Image 1 (cartoon, rainbow, N blue to C red):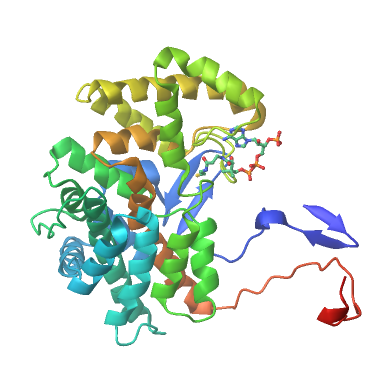
Image 2 (image 1 turned 135 degrees about the horizontal axis):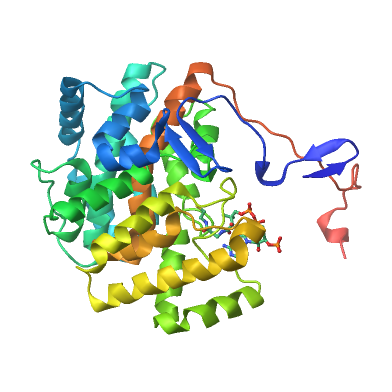
Length: 385
Ligand SMILES: CC(C)(COP(=O)(O)OP(=O)(O)OC[C@H]1O[C@@H](n2cnc3c(N)ncnc32)[C@H](O)[C@@H]1OP(=O)(O)O)[C@@H](O)C(=O)NCCC(=O)NCCS
């Protein structure tokens, strides 16, 4: 924050509250995360992605019949049109996965006769459509990228495991099904981060929810947000052997390089989502290939060293993106798909925020302090030197 002539500039809106929300609490000091008041650890252990979607959208846990009906609605929305498949097929090989998702996300508003609605119940229906179809579109993008056929959903599977099936072509075993479900839960929501804020800014103009979610996907792309897990994994691959880890980190920090998957604008301690993911490394390691075992060892050595160097002293700790890479690899998800998988789970957070924000909508319109000349004399083009 800088002060200029009594004007406070809040770079990156750091420390600025934009609204009151009952969706998510990020306690960055104590390293805690709550969805609608429920600690993330409990949801990761005992809930399902479908139940978490219900919780985020409706503000309470469903009863058994409500959850069954909700899961059925999600299943009914899984299919995508031939036109959507064509867009994915024509762009899929060349464009980056998240760019394809951004484009098809925008296009699905065409299948909704009234993309904008001011009615909450109608917007929840649209959210269900978006959450469900995004998983199918993301999986289809992954298939095309690998030169494989797009698969139809398997209606006997839950949301996250069906996503993994449509992407990899293999029905996940019990452990893999639980892990992908947990990863979807952990990425479902995270308060007013950059992509959620982009979604809200867009929808504060009363643009429809599809436009908002498309903006969310766009904002997720950069390495400071949705791209950090891929960058972290690339670093682990570059490190190569576990015994190279400490020297690599030492050199990177000496060269003032940031280590992706560490640090957070809000958490100044261990990100609770990273702790949950770390606990899964032990579970998957024994069943992993040698390559993935090596990545897991590298990640654990890098984590230890980073905490020693920057943890207590600088408040830079592992975030959700650090351990995601080896776990996604274990599940058969390629690095170029990481951000697209993230987007698939985050759709519920984006939609929940739009629905909440529209209860008391206010157009976002911040200010800039202009610093530059005024009343400059206009010189015709032929007289300019
Ligand atoms: C997420 C992030 C942008 C938040 O940081 P921020 O609050 O904006 O803080 P800054 O980027 O200004 O960093 C503050 C200081 O910590 C250092 N720092 C922050 N993250 C770091 C990292 N991952 N590795 C090494 N140093 C880091 C910065 O270099 C800076 O040091 P300086 O004061 O000597 O210049 C930042 O930590 C980062 O870029 N992390 C890596 C990307 C990532 O993992 N993103 C996913 C977030 S869920």
